Image 1: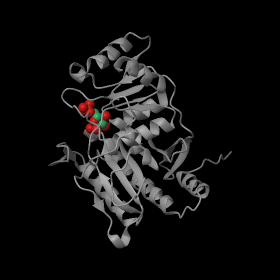
Image 2: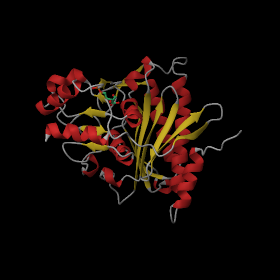
Image 3: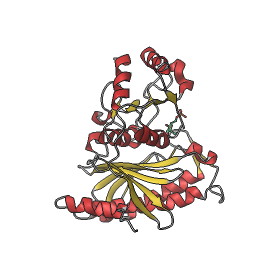
Image 4: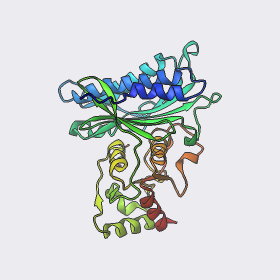
Length: 318
Ligand code: P6P
């Protein structure tokens, strides 16, 4: 018996119908991102077979080695978004400078993206992902606080390929049906459990952490059933948190006083998603979404996940 399941295309067209005065411009932008995700997914799945594994020998803005697949994914997204005619500018984790659309082809959206987050895991076949964050152009600035995001999401290339996205009305997850090439609505209205039993932090940095955070980590280890999980790929660690609950921590420490994760490219999209899924996100005692950015590549500390887990963390550090 056939059961109708909405596709991502059905969903964004329905969103367009719900939005007054929608012109279809945002729908086209989302369709371009979705199509790029399918192309990236096919290359990630085949990356062990074709010569796009390994390193390019170059380093990116942050001094990190660029993987060939990183480079391919970055170029695909830049070219697709600029040629869509819907963007004013794109900012990628892989590029120091923004790319502006030619004036005669510029649109009204600004898209930040991390083309392939967790790319150090590519060769080990661990889950990696693409992260995106969309703002409406306001004047000439590219620097708006995260609360201005009109959409954010990620694609996780794991045991299945999922497209998880919010437009400000909750979070929905779509799973790629490789036989058909469509993303199907598999996880409607994703809600993070109020409390989870998984904490996710790179404990190699324990000795560099503030005392309050050390006390928090030590205390939760004694709680019944608590588990540590850390993939080292933000998309994988946060997708698990959306599904199973718990808390992800990448706080500032003595060696990384600003934290490591990028505010505009990683922290803000996931903070938006976490809040839309009933969770919480904290950067130095406040919401990262209120931070007024001063640089497109600035870093921020982040602790996010189930609301009760984040509140418990706060009780140790306030
Ligand atoms: P560390 C990947 O490089 C990344 O930006 C995130 O995906 C991940 O959460 C973090 O860095 C891992 O950092 O210091 O534990 O290797």
